[in-house]
Every structure is written in structure tokens, then in C-alpha cells.
Amino acid sequence: MSVFAAPSRSDPWVPSIAALSVIFGVLAAASLRTQDRIRGEGLIGARPQQVFGAYSEMRATVSEQKKQIGDLQSSLSKYQEAAAKETDNEKLLYADLQKSKVMAGIVAVTGPGVTVTLRDARKVPSKPSDMSEEEYIQWTNGYHIHDADIQTVVNELRAAGAEAISINDQRVVASTAIRCVGPVVQVNAVPTSGSPVKIRAVGDPEAMFSGFTMPGGVKDQYAMTDPQMFGIEKSKALTLPAYSGATPLRWSQIATDKKAEQAQRASETATDTVPDPVSGDAPDTSAAPSNALPTKENKK
Image (cartoon, rainbow, N blue to C red; front, side, top):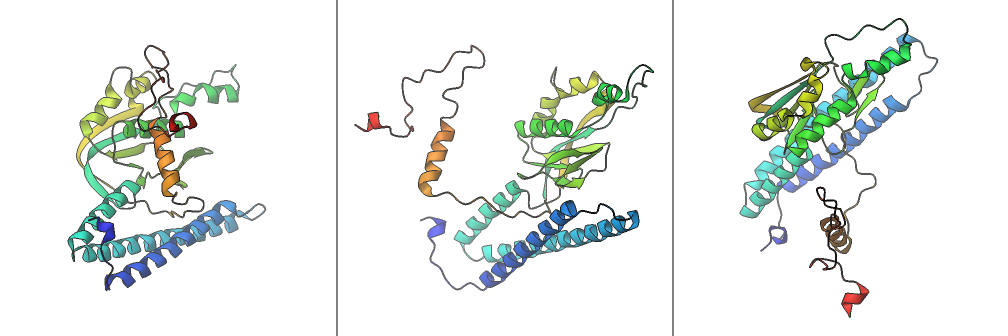
């Protein structure tokens, strides 16, 4: 019998968990609104002291809200853990819930992994007298770490099977944005501390290490500019923080069973028309896959 079909009963933990979930949602929404206000409020024309004061106040508010969210997450986890001890069905549900929280990045995790360090080149060529400032910036662009460099490392880690990633202690989740804002790289809308950038990942250390150090790989690409720009080391135990930002859903809704099944089938057959990467030949589509959606022809 499915654990989701267990009969309902009065449970003393349900009201507490429900209340904490509501409070957590309210604080998450408030945190998001505060961050949007920081980015959206116009402070043009204000004096530097006023701008600094407003920024400091808003930053303190966001920090306090993140702390409250973290405390509520911890309390909610304790209630869920206590509730899971009552029956086998609840234990199974709790185990699935914990796995989902790890994959979503909303809990801290510990495990073996690697630490990738990116840093600006130690020596940048001097600007020739006959070169313009714009040309010089373009010429020396590769001597500095940018958002594209960080994104490349994150993609390589995921391809190597990383189960959790953080950038300068900012947990990477599905909604994480990595982008340059002026001279500063922001992760989760939080400015990084600059060079060096520490990217930590929990997963198979050997697989991730090999992915970066293979001939012609990422490490060799940086070595052509400055070997000190890229470093990687394996660790037996790393602890990554939980994501502390807001995670509201504004547009996404759970699909109906029919639409979900259609989307899943489309995903499973998405590569049927992709040419072979080695030969370049188109795949043989004369025989329809067994899980293909029915058509007017094969319905007859």
C-alpha cells in the first residue's frame, strides 16, 4: 500500500508544522520584497550619507530575516523529525522529504568533495602607449575572473555528478543567478568577496577532480594564461550551508497527470531526432518507440 494512502488521524505535530510553514512562507515573501526594494528603489539625487544609511538599514533587515528563516527551517525540521518517529509510513515520508530538501539546497550538507579556487592573474600586462583604454580592457579580459568562469566550473561540477555546490558560501540552487554587476560578481543577488572565488562541491572527489584535470580540460585552459588562476583539491569532508534566500512560486503550478505524462514522454524522446555526434547521421525514426504518444494513424 502506498504511504500516501495511509488513513488520516489526529496528529499533535500537524498544527505546529502547519503554523511554522505559514510563518516561514510569510518571512520568505517579506525577505524577497525587501531585496526587490533594495534593487528597485531609486536613490538618484540622494546624498552619499543618505544612500549609505538606507543601504545599511536594508541590508541589516535582510540579514535578520534570513536568520529568522534559518531558525524556522531548523524548528520545522525538528518537528518533522519527531513526527517521523511515530509510524513506518511517516518514517518513509520523512526520508523522502529530507532527500528532497537536500536536492533543493535548503538544508546544510556534509560529505566528500572538491574545492575549486579561481583567482585573478598575478601579473597583468601593462597598457601599451598606443592602445586605447577600451582595447586594453578587452585585451586583459582573460586575466580576471568573471561570471562566465564561475558558471563554467559549476557546469563541469554538475556534469561530474556533484550533489551540492556553493560559491563563496552561497548555496547554488535551481534559481541561483551568477552574473557580473559592474566589477562585482553576484551569486543569489549577493556580491561575492572578489578574487579568489571558492567553489565547493559535495560528490565523488575522484570523478570531479578528473573532469577538471584531463588533458585539454579547464585546468589546462587557465594554465595558458596563468597556472595560479585555477586550483583544485580533494577533501574527505566538506560542509556546505543551506540556501537562505526566499523561494516563492509565482508562476509555476503542478501539472495535471495527463499533461505531466505528455511532457515526460516528450522528454524521453527528445533526442530521437538528434544526429549522431560522431558520424553525423540522422537517427532511424522509421520504427516508433514503444512509449510514443498515439497518432491518428496508429490508432486505427
